[in-house]
Image 1 (cartoon, one colour):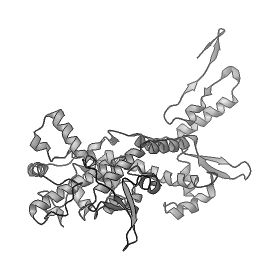
Image 2: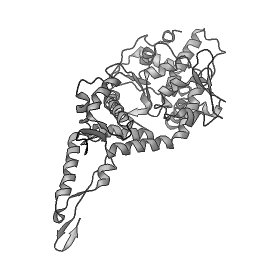
Image 3: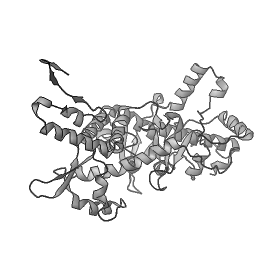
Image 4: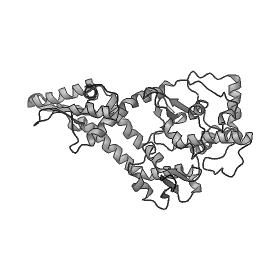
Length: 405
């Protein structure tokens, strides 16, 4: 189905860069590599790893490091990785800092706390499919985006048999997640709540808001007179809900094609709304293409709607395409952050902290050990270990027989 030919929009639209989203992905590129090194260290029984092994392991993971580059890369992030000399073997080892371990624990707690919401998100995700079922492997690949734990097959699907059913397909031998019963109360899209809020707060015309989307074009996007008219006409086109079963409809007419194209926009919009960070890679959206009636050329399709979505090619040398929901972000930051998003962002803050700050921390600690009691400069350990942002220095001096802080 050539869905791109059913509107007045240009068949191909040039991408206009939005530096807020691109800078977000550049920072996440560093975080992604750091996460792989973290996994290597945590996979060890002692949660430590000799520096000499990082080069071979990095090449095995395909991280693109040359010889001796992986060990040097760890030195760039002293707030995450700690290099020390083994007291017995007398060789350099690497382990995670207390701040990094604290961030991992906070993310685990946030993931566990939002598990009921993750169950609801998974129910809505499966309900959007044509047959009420999705491949388990496709959901497993995107589990982090939807806030699902690594063992969600057991902790979510099998734990709630009243919501989900897990079965093996006879012909393909693939495992599928099937919804037990469609809940009409869950079949409400996020865009419908946005329209209701816009209607109540701004008092817009009900006919204009009924099928519209929030459109916010990136800076520098040229909007001509005819393009503006095409957007206005498209906003008023009715469409079927992503949760509605359209298998019994006649989809051969031009009007049906228009509705199906706008339904695809609504489906991707709802898919992004179900994610924790309101973003997901284009490749993972493509996994749900057949199950959710999405067009084949997803990238070109999304570029036609740059006021609703943003496709960033930054973060992996142009090989990775990340789709953002524009209305959920402002200046590269999530407008309504959740606890899991904030916990993950703390790792990004640790990665972006300069090595100079870590050097100052170490000097202050050594100064505390070497200074006499009369002239104490004390750095509290809980500031060094338990908080990413807070850094405190407390001192006391003796002056005229009384202590002053």
